[in-house]
Length: 249
Image (cartoon, rainbow, N blue to C red):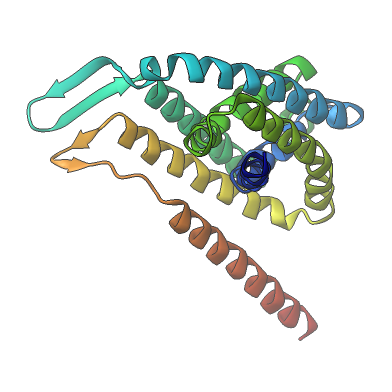
């Protein structure tokens, strides 16, 4: 029992660490909803994703080998090779979608001239909840597979998912409010999201054993990811301080 409690604690910490990028995506995506519905979208989206995560955990424990088995292969002379499985397809699609979302939002911010007709209209609540749930499931693959490597107890992993989901519901509002009050940091958040997309693409490429022109795709390690994020944050802080000094002069 003591071992299970210790494992549960480790899994909750793991959920919190791996959930950072997911939380950032939820906060940015929820801003597309009408203001009065944004909290509802975040809470319902995370709650639904939490239930589906537990269902996904149950499925993965039963049929994990089918997610890893190749469903088709690509072999084009010496230029391209890939052995695609379901897991790699999900991760690749998720990474591509996040890069597209971050790029679109960055380009939207950089557009200087904008008439009233070009102002982006709020998206439907159902549409945003759908994408929040879907991307939450994409992000959850890593945390679920990591959890399965630590324990075989279903109740321990399910409890960690519930605690992690409740923490995300609590933090999502705080992150969204912070981005609203400090809009300059939203640009930083979008570039962090862009790096998340690159990390998922490299991970999906590694899972699919993709080889391009004789070079195998290697996944971006979590250490490298957090190092890049740290550099982005430090750069943003240094730039803000420098800008304030210039404004004083």
